[in-house]
Length: 138
Image (cartoon, rainbow, N blue to C red; front, side, top):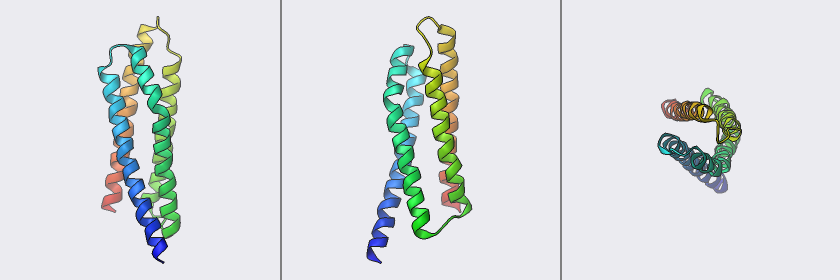
């Protein structure tokens, strides 16, 4: 039984650390979009962080599944975390796909993308914080 408690303890730690790292990445990306004037430097920075974003999101989803499976706990909060993880993944893919096709001469699209990216990051941050708060309340 001791090994089971170690698994739960380490999974919880990795799960929570992943959530805070993902929040940090989202805040950093929002800051980059907000402050970087050169679109292509901004896009390069965001492109570098995209694999980390998805990896951390996967780690959060995986450790959450391990915890839910090990404890046999599929409460509404756990069920809410599944679409939240999918929402984060899908919105980040949409953001990346929109960003990668914008060219140097498309200044209007560059500005539209910046607004789009800010909205995406704001929604992602709200979703993460809301689910985290709900999990602490219930």
